[in-house]
Image: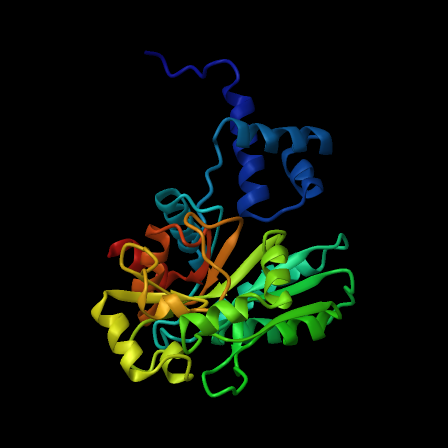
Length: 318
């Protein structure tokens, strides 16, 4: 075999040089044209040729590259409609700031739209942090609704209700749920659900463009327990029945199945459908969230997820 160049090799060599100068050297097309002794349009075509012939290959050496790969794996495995993974902090695995910032960005994406829309919210610490970072807007045409009651059993208001905060920030109509998360009896729950405000929320929830919810674990001093929504006895009962997580008060097992009876028979929150009805995005991270997130994904209680890479990797590994 002779060492004679094949036809077109010289052009490919030139294209490779142009591609290197542009993508690696960071030079402008004008500088590349002068360096190679060609016109600017020719330099532009050479750069395009370098890409089309795969002379230039890209590798993204940045934490976000790993996050994008994790998001794809989660999306593929659990058939998600939406997945956003952000870099976490190994020294503070429960830090929620980066996840909250991402959630705030997506909340802004929806509420920035000018066409009237309904946005539904759950509750939780990460969501509260996210809502606090949404920039002020004027969107009186929107409606922000709650899927969960805003009171504890003693009648005190929840510190983590986010509907009023977000609605105040964007000047929209707000529709809180003026009920406890869990009623004292099934009869009381039925009475709450006959209220006109509850029926209106039910109707609006069906129109929601997106729903953002927190996701909680079931355990001693978990939010549902520590915030006074369920008692020690009810927590023990849920644990004995295999509950591992909750969304808007609804407890589910490791397979993502909503438990029948027990505390769930008295939950006043809007029902959860399986698979999730519309885009339901869970927001949360940390070691304590791994099991409930995995269970919610298995049961298709959620169709979207915002979390960090540490949590995402643990969900995939378990």
